[in-house]
Length: 565
Image 1 (cartoon, one colour):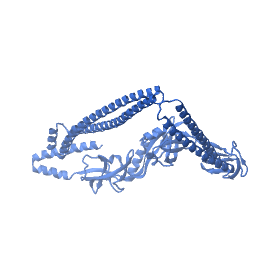
Image 2 (tube, one colour):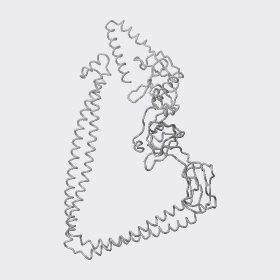
Image 3 (cartoon, rainbow, N blue to C red):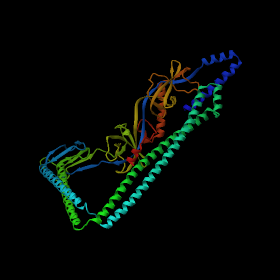
Image 4 (cartoon, rainbow, N blue to C red):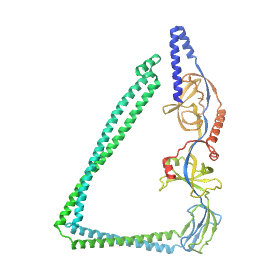
């Protein structure tokens, strides 16, 4: 919109300039009359005051249906019930302690298991030390011996082959690094060439806008372009080429550095391969110079025995740790907690009576109704609010829902934040099925808003025209969420400012105005009707229940899609 309006303003400016030149030729009196008429220019505009309203952005997510049901609580330990909490009809939260079982036996078993673990660790330390001593002894004995002749011959051949492979890899990496270095140099030359051409065109563009009247035509004639649009287009083309060449240069430099690093590694590998070859040849010579047999067999037997002792002690430690885990679990099982949040519908244990495994102790009716679970990135989670409406879609059917939980910590498996929603009323959604969820991911309440059509941009800087005591003035603003017809203004305006909402080719900063103010109440009513109509058109019936100026914007990130796919 900005470019279109700028073109119209330039066209009118050129027309006025030509007309002024013509009138000058008709005499001083005509020029004076034209100047007086230009000074008396008054532009008719429509204005309104900024309004307030709620703006929001909604996003789509892949989700899974998880429905809570009646949960039967069965103790995993048997024994006397030493405490009992809650009664039938009470509401419990997940993790609440329901009852406890006598843990004296479990405490004794835990102490025994801890002692067994300590003893097993000591055995592992002892056997490991013995193994290390055996290894040092074996190394000392085998230092003058080698393996079989064939093994050593194969080792030598393999070492030689590795040296050749390492040499080939080194040469390849070096050549590739040089290749990309040359490509980077070519791209750097192209960047310089295109940048120089772009700078030259930019200078002509600056000269054009700095000139007036016939001087503009002279600038164009000297440039070789017929109009400013083609000149600007050529400038942008060379600017883009320069940027592209710069990107190519950076990419080639990166490739060159990468292969340079590879070449350094390949060189190190080459030296390592040479050392391995020398060692293999030395081992082969040792085989010819020293005997083997009984000594080697004895060393091998000693090492095997030491390793078996270590393995046995580690297995004992693993068994002791497993017993300790079981003891801890048995102690933990004496405290029976609610696995879900809900209402207690049945209790089958009594204080000081026996509870047994396999028998139902409590029955809890879960609170959740078709819980919808999905995962979002951190930047999305921090902007989501519990209670916000949502729409769940399955096979083209929409269900109203609400956000019930937004995770505050990252899920260790997904590396994202868990979000839960609950449907309103009963649904036919099947547990474990995949659905889509649309909900608000960003919103601004009671925001100061102005019509979208009244906002202009100079680069990335947004601004509006205001009626400043009968004179047009430019106000730079900071914008937030943009709706169908309204845009949020975070700074730069107050509710008392009078925004120019109509467009005129004569509208420039400093011109006099004849303003017709459209009442804020009337503007709000009209825009509200427009937003409602647009929302109803763009959203499904379920989504309309969100009750907000939801934009047709999909903010879902790549992380969100990957986590929920």
